[in-house]
Length: 147
Image (tube, rainbow, N blue to C red; front, side):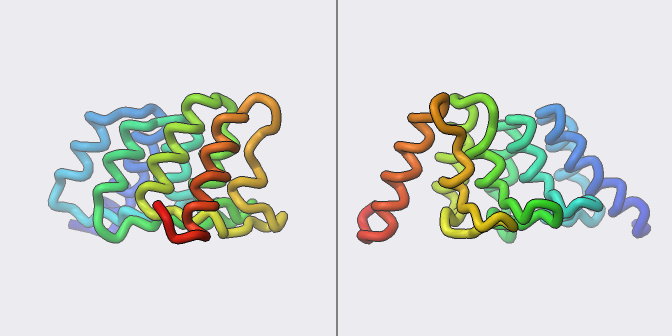
């Protein structure tokens, strides 16, 4: 295997997430070639960032079963984690699903982006009341130690 093959597979991870292409994702993950599950593009976005951006919930769920996946990866441009992107997603139903999945897998609600915003701070007001309520309850549960 060459470095180019590994780089190509890492790029395919991101492309699969843009289209929620589970067949492509499973194919590249099943190869013997080197794959960096936390690979980032030139903007610092990981495949998880793209899975959330495009509401590719199938890809998101597959990635989160891999040991070593960085659920709190911070991109270079905004300083956002995948949870920031999920909380701010335009589709409130998809946002809620993705937030619940990410928090369930250990994503931190405390990380601030470059604008000093936590994921809860970026939830759109008005249209995402259920997302905001769920995140507030989860944050309170984390503070009190109940889960």
